[in-house]
Every structure is written in C-alpha cells, then in structure tokens.
Amino acid sequence: IRARLGYPKPDAEWEMLRRRAERGTDEVELDVVVDRETLMGMQKVVEEIHVSEPVGKYIVQLVAATRSSGRVRVGSSPRGSLAVMKLARARAALSGRGFVLPDDVQDVAVPALAHRLILRPEFWAQDLSEERVIEEVLEQVPSPPATPSVHAP
View (tube, rainbow, N blue to C red):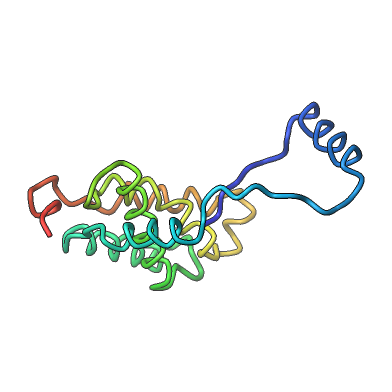
C-alpha cells in the first residue's frame, strides 16, 4: 500500500533532530512489539477471513475499471486485486469479523490501488491524482448488496 504521511510540523521535526543529536549515533534500539509466533498467528487469522463470491467479483470489477478508465494509461494488475483482498481481509479481522464486507473493500481501495496506476500525461497537467481516479471508480462500480451471501462461507 501507499500511505501518505506528509511532513511533520516544525516542532515535531525539531524534536526528531534533538533526539537524534542526543542519541549520538545512527544506531537505533527498537523494542519488540510482537514476536514471530504471534505475527505468524495474526497472518493466519487474516488468511481465514471469508471473501464471498459477490465481494470477490466486486474487487475484480473495481480493479478492471482502473484498466478501462479514460484517464489511465496503465491500470492495476491482478496483483492489485490480491492487495485489495488481503487488506480487506485484514480490515475485517481488525473489526472482529470473519468475513469481508463491501465497506472493507471500499476503505482499502485507495491505498491498495492508487500507486499502481499510471495516468495519461494530459491529466498530470490538470493535477488529477491517482487517488481521485480510484474514488471515481468506487463511485461508478456498483457495490454488491448486503445479503447473507456476502457473509456466508
């Protein structure tokens, strides 16, 4: 995914410089936040999250729409579809669900797909962003209805 963080505020940037100068070395000591076994278990949980056929086909349609957009020179590949599915599963798991909803797909589409597009040069001059193209695709491609088939394995 691509996550835009922007620049820190001046005070935060100064704090970063102050702490680096105080440390006296480029070496950084990191605290372990999760051990290997726990991380592998978390990954396994994500792999067990159900993606129904309607939601899976919705992902395929969204990604295909990036390829047919008149604003895009190169749309997302099937790797983009895989990224959307994986991120949507992770979002469902973090929400405590064992299944992916269309809302999960919509929430992860921009960070999963925007950096995978190459816009047509004429749209660069118009300041059109890849993020906006994905937002347009989300507006155009109909979401599957919230029916039991979306939830059932």
